[in-house]
Amino acid sequence: MDYETLRVIWWVLIGVLLIGFAVTDGFDLGVGALLRIIGKTDDERRVMINTIGPHWDGNQVWFITAGGALFAAWPLIYAASFSGFYFAMLIVLAALWLRPVGFDYRSKLENPRWRNAWDWALFVGGLVPSLLFGVAFGNLFLGVPFSYDEMLRPSYDGGLFGLLRPFALLAGLVSVSMLLMHGASWLQLKTDGFIRARAQRVGVVLGVATAVLFGLAGIWVAQLNGYQLLGSIDTNGPSNPLNKSVELVAGGWVKNYSLYSWMLAAPALGLLGALACAWFSAKARAGWAFVSSSLAIAGVILTAGFSMFPFLMPSNVQINSSLTLWDATSSHTTLMIMFVVACIFVPLILAYTLWGYWVMRGRLNEKAIVANSHQLY
Image: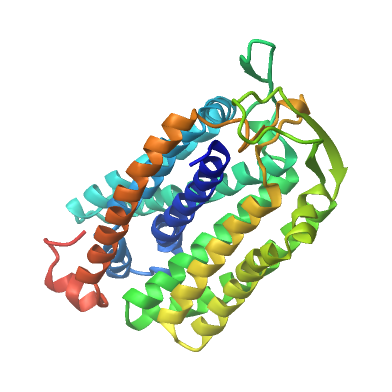
């Protein structure tokens, strides 16, 4: 298998891992952020927590796998992004740390103040990562302030607050509404009674909000200066981000859709999936609402990937340092070994994930929580 093909395969596989993480761990984050909105009593919040309790740690595998694959397949991306987004990632990690602690300790004491504090911790643990993941993706469209010297040593010229630009914040709102919509659709699927009824109403609102925000972000992207390669690039050559020329073009991020019309399926899926989730939520069709929200998430992530192709991490300081899938990858041998490993383990991850969902199928209600007060979260 040639180098060019392997590079494209790993671009696809990283996308699959990101979609897998967003679809699985996304409803965990969404339920956590909705804990104070949909859950009105302690028992209702326990029901909500117990719908994700058996799955959240397994869902994190997608996140860990995506990070490991990024490190091994695209080391230049890993180095530049983890250096540039360092403090933002620390905030995300701190928020994610609240989740396992909150799940384990919330119900250890009957004290209402104790439980209320952990409810807020789980809310933060769901909302903050949802927001910052979107902000990070938004900054990729605007360009990240990094550059390389002649020795290929990277430097970063930005800071935490420099990431909070208007378009990036809009992308963050898209992410929040999308993942909360997904969490609401999960609650419709896994609960009964008042929780399910509230989740249906919230699902309608968030489905429409996601579609509107995603549409606004698309209009904004069409007005941005996009990055384009000048001349040809050796797609089978060694990874050297300085061996190319890049220019800024008005509306450059939407050019791929005129070149490859089939890519339009991605934004259509994101928009229609969100609206379908709102529709099925209103009609109390929980299964279809969850499928629709999952498809909307896939559509949004694919839209970002298709719009930027072949760019992965553009630079707004030294545009020729912008990283693409042709010049940011590991060696041919590394990608080949990883491909073989992925062919073995990704199906295994899918298999045990689906098996876990099948074993824990069914709905939860307050009666089950009261009857098992010392066995559940």
